[in-house]
Image 1 (cartoon, each protein chain N blue to C red):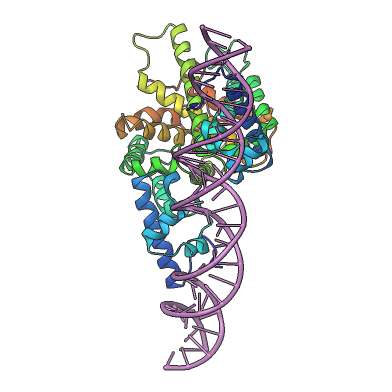
Image 2 (cartoon, rainbow over the protein chains, first blue to last red):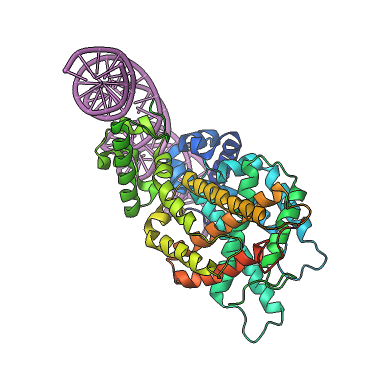
Length: 207
Length: 207
DNA sequence: TCAGTTATCTTGCAGCTGTAAGATAACGTG
DNA sequence: CACGTTATCTTACAGCTGCAAGATAACTGA
């Protein structure tokens, strides 16, 4: 029992997990996740198939672990939702789309129709959590009215924004990125602004 | 060769496909799609396993075909984005969430983390297409300015809205629907209104 | 360094997958 | 109805899956 995602002190464990993650990311650049078997990953990683099962239930679980760092980098690129001091939002969004395009094959293979619902769900949750955090931090800093927006409203807004970004990104990736990252940012930014409860377009949540 | 989704005149084909679809929907109410094998579906449908493969590549492809009618019903419930004569938007949205809750187990099993990326992608595309259609019809009816919003902008808005709705719905389903459908509609409607280029909050697309 | 722990490897198994070939029987058409 | 067509069924096979038991070897902590 060397349970799943918990970081381990044992050198062997780190070595095996790293080899598996590396092998999976390599393979995911070559073909869709649905065409990658546990045997494939284990062989490319130079690890026995049973060792794979000692760490992960299936390919999807490994994929989740393997892409978490990349996903977090991606989320870190997103603009802060709040004050937006110098209109840096669009530039930040452009960096987001550019990074997406930089690993387009990988993201398509993991998140596209032949990808993994498990990974897609993981990304959605993580993105929603990040948005929710920023909304909270945001609301704390701003002198809100007598009563701030209720919890449920924040949750819905976070899920809404996370889903929207994933929808736009997935659509763009599947069309092979016809628009430049900068243009995508210009097209997407006004939509996000319109939702921002603290931003210029204050049509945001009020119920 | 009785290729995939095309409707067939042959009684045997219709019978087999209907039996498979019915069996899959039954099983999908009982457990996650990832735990449903081709053998399971074929057996429950009273059909040989090879007959399954004569019609569909795998369980995901059958699931796509089997849930298309339900999905289209769901999409049909969504409010028209345009003039919104009598503020019927929220009510329409409430019907959408209510229908979702009515088959919560099924939708969770198909679209959740243990569901199918293929089905999820299909739903996303279909929803985005529906939104795009309404935007187009909408723009045609309204006396737009000298130049209407460009194609790309409409596509991004459609993908944005489709993703957002799926994000909110998925989040709500996974939390076991703590809010009533009506409340969900009340929380979601202002977000959609804020995006509507023709609606009250005109922070919509302009670039 | 030594001892105990434990990660990995090997072997083996039952079940599912995806495909193929040929036999049977139901179907639509004239 | 009789015909040709074709959907379905049966049988078979190689490969992958998920899991278990036992042997080996690498690691950690003293």
